[in-house]
Length: 115
Image (cartoon, rainbow, N blue to C red):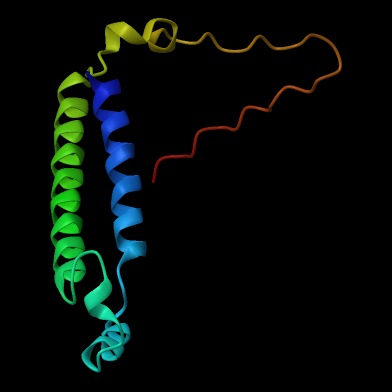
């Protein structure tokens, strides 16, 4: 199920990117107000802007919902770490053996005298 959600999530992201890049900027509508051939477009003079804006909003909402669902599913499937599961890491590590020979041993310091 998570794989299907991830595939759909990537497809929604690609669709959202495409819809955003197809839209015109705010300055591009100035030419349409002076009759720059906007009536010959597929969606009409204002139809493309509202259609693309609506489609972007629907795609972004779907992207958010799928992101939220995947986060909830990932949180529920997380397994808490138990000390028994750590195995070797939870066992005490023995102290390293002192090598014999030419390694000097640390001198013992006397305890301080009581006052």
